[in-house]
Image (tube, rainbow, N blue to C red; front, side):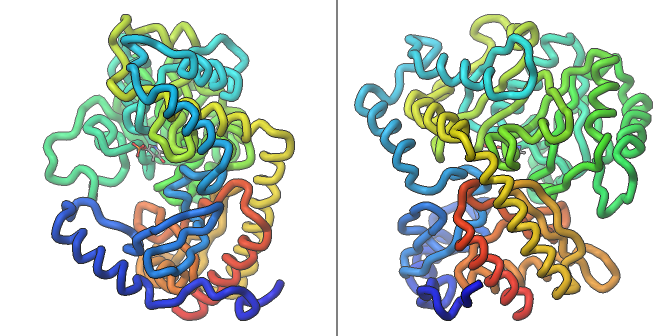
Length: 439
Ligand SMILES: *Cc1c(COP(=O)(O)O)cnc(C)c1O
């Protein structure tokens, strides 16, 4: 490893710098305080894995806007596809006058999602919207109301998804009654519960049988690896046991792969790591290189449950977004791409484990591919949110952008480009080492 000193200096000013500070003052005047940036540096441009702010500071992007720009900022082929489509048309509305690209994205999704059965898709714009669609489809198909969700889960900020999220603060406090018929069970959280996966699942199943009853449940909505919840990787057997129980009782399994899908974990979908074959899978974030596109893909007989006109919206399956999606999916299916993400995961994990050996605040290191979490704990082993805040700030001051995670705000979450270079990984790990040492 070379040292930071031999590298070009990424940071030129205080972080945030003077121009960012001026813009931030304007934000406070004109933008609702309900929208608040994690790191108020204002971005001027971005390329590959590097964000450059308005003060000329560079940050290695270990967030990708929460796993959206997974194939790098300024991805030339995706930009080319968007530009070409923008010149042909930017909107017609698929439910008025359709176009081929929407059908093509739907067809590609049937090929890349888990499950060897006839599938169909419906496109929408945001992740939360697609989760709502998936729940509606499952309810219409089963003629049942209940939704099972998991502790530490996150599914969006629309009214239904607020009820499905684990955390009330800041999402759903004081904004009215939360929707009903939502039943929550413990997740599998090996670092915190020490349970084997099947036992953790059986605990949840017993709870659902008491609080809802299997015959009342339309669906189980679950992230195979929880993202916002702190990159919580379930113990082996957890998802398989829940899956077997859902199958037995006709409960639709909805995998929320909004964050974990499309190569993020070294497989096209994280469900594949766990033998999970969801009936419906929700894709969003990384699908269209930053253009809002989301999708529900699943068993054809379930996907047709709602009558014609019952789904979609004005911007659903935007053609420019679909053009990007076709290109993103093409790149992810190129030979060697997923293998490279697996290698990246091994390099990051080895580096983080070396940091764990040096810095006592690191309680747990976990993740797969380009999705990792570092759980920070105090001397008593309790969640240490203050440690996250310091490490995040010290890393930013050295030119590395990291994400927050965990229901207690104490998990450093890393989501780099899924084909980032070894050189940038090593530089990021050195910055993290210095950030941990500085705190
Ligand atoms: C981001 C996210 C959502 C919500 O998607 P939006 O596009 O922000 O509505 C839902 N579930 C998971 C797992 C996510 O990461």
